Image (cartoon, rainbow, N blue to C red; front, side, top):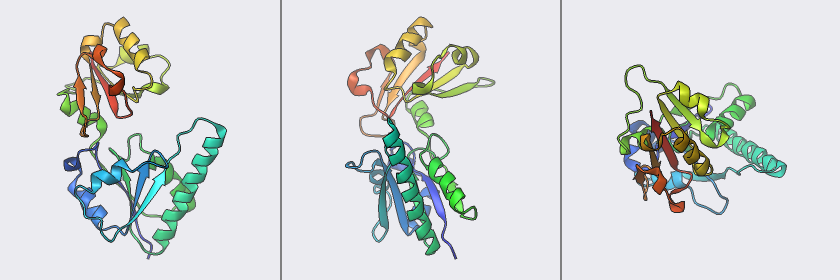
Length: 236
């Protein structure tokens, strides 16, 4: 009998925010796939899980997801994903249960989406389970005491570095969550100034992790505050 694969959301970084279900799934898996952003780096997801789960006896497979800038890197990315899928598929065929760790929630801006798609293409009968986790969005809202929606208010969640113009979106929604803000922070800051929304904005970095900061005057955001794990919440 084939094994099952679980995409396990482990939350934003605080080990105490990992769900009981996620812990039990990891404990009952033979192999744990853990993503990392650099070939020479360590896996943040793995370091979080180690705080609450004894991984002794588990096979740990670290997988690297290349950042894409060139056609050659696009080729490397596809090659890496295909190799991961084949490695997972081989273990499932041996009857092993596999956990694939993902920060936050696997259904929201997760790299597992690409693996999921390729696994289905490889074998549509593969049994895949998505285990939800606390998202960085709700974690940032909690630490900044931002209520994302009340009554009939509408929320927009945007990958800020992929948006050319924010005006139309800000016209339509009461709450706007801007993700991936570190690379376009100056552009966002200029826009918020123009729309007189500086005082209605809060910058949260590394929510649930060491170095967590909530900056209510986003004019005071420094270079050190700008990193991948940063979000701006705007409440109009």
